[in-house]
Image (tube, rainbow, N blue to C red; front, side):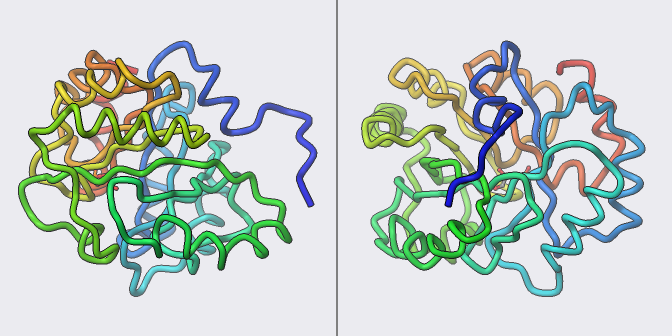
Length: 246
Ligand code: 1GP
């Protein structure tokens, strides 16, 4: 069963954006309703586009409680960024249906998707086919460990561009280039430019962005949507700095 949309879908919102967007990544392990309230009080909802919710490895957090807190305190759409099928929740507005195209682990290219498909069909959640590319950030990340994949080398922009292009040719609707949560190095500007030269679908960039200057550099290089998690978790006031560029 497919949902009938009377308003723009999340994908259409991303595709039709004329200016670069910002998504705040909320890791259910590292938040609670008080922290979410503190954050939502600081947000100018005209400048933040989405909450992304998920993580490569969730232990104590609860996806549904996190979504409920976000929904009760903000009108921003909540998009799942799931580390596994266990993180799919029907209260979200959409899910990034991630195919880990930088890796060669069939479980994250198609396996988890087959497990999730009947449930996604049942709950009619907007499902956005997304090519997910992990890029080496200078240290091992939970995402590469949990997915058992080797990230793209940081100094191979052409390889990243070919991977993204293959994703687009396969029919994926978004590319998400991620250095991983808390990455030491963010995605290099040169790599972002190389990907943008090859693909026409929107490019999401995240991982290791800790300053407004770095976020601006990623936007200038061609990122359509920036994702920031740790830097805002560590210092919610960082959002004020970001507001000057979005
Ligand atoms: C991780 O891209 C996201 O998957 C965000 O990363 O937490 O380092 O901002 P950070």
